[in-house]
Picture 1 (cartoon, rainbow, N blue to C red):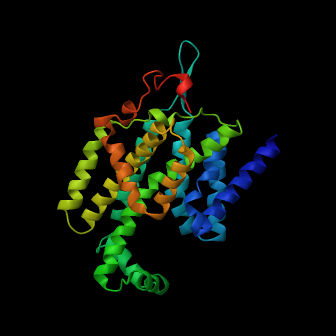
Picture 2: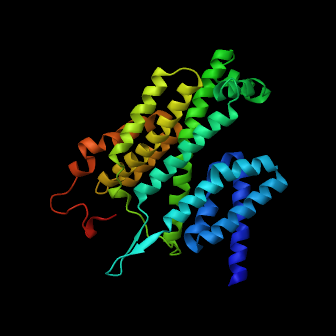
Picture 3: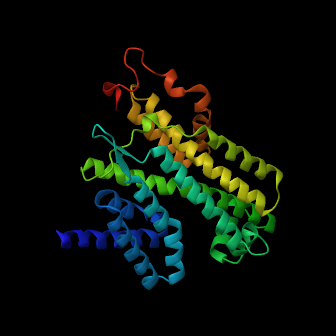
Amino acid sequence: MANTQLLRIVFAAIGSFVLFAALVFMPFAPLPIAAIGLSFGITQAVITAVVAAVLTAIILSPPLAIVFAITFLAPTLVLVRQGLLSRQTADGKFFFFPLTQMIVLALAMTGIGTILIFFITGGSEGLPQSFANAIQQAPEVRNALVQVYGISSQEEMLWIANVMLITGFASWPLILLGNLQLAQALLVRVKRNLRPQDNYFRLQLPIWLVGPLAIFMAGAMLASGWLATLSAALAASILAAYFLLGLAIIHAISRHWNGRGFMLAVLYFLIFVMAWVIIPISLMGLLDTRFDFRGLNRRPDKPSDAEGDEE
């Protein structure tokens, strides 16, 4: 049994490293770590992450291993550890770390990481300008931008650098939470999950989250230079959480629709090919505290929290 578990850890570490090394599949690099943690425990997840980091340091380079650990491995381990926390009530029921707090924790980690990266790696010019200069000095990237988008001037390079930084930091919590949910869904299907399946139909976000969102959006509009970009990146990260809430609302209100599977497939296809679709979905999540979209769609003959109304 010990040898079997060791083999799983080794294969998961190799898989995580391969996904990280293959740039196209890099967003899925935390998936094996999350799967090991949610099925065997945090200790095994830590061992897997350490092996993956060592492989990255040996085969690629130590700096890349550090980047891998900071961006994917360490945050995933924190989320797995929290996700496995539970308490038992007097009647014997177990309550696990709430999904809402998992999302807030992911936002907090990515927010702190975003601020540290801007202050540590920006230099005297600021991170957006440093990133734009790096793009200018990379012939392959610069030529691709010129051919595809017609971007060549320094001002345009700075603009595209800002866009790439904002979208990159906004996708950070989505990648962490998405891999955690994907690993959980796969484990539930094969009945190897330590944490029970979360009910996304009842997902809510704390109302106080609107406050930081408004502050960062105001900073993005009123500040200048890299401070405006930092504020925009933090605001976009919070909007990413409302995007998840919007998806949960769509899944909830469409439970009894005919052709639901086809509709959801089209929706996810549009999200991948047209990024602007994310905006109305995020607005739906943001406005849910005011309009309660799931309540508007509730069936009067079957309450939404009844067991028979589950998907």
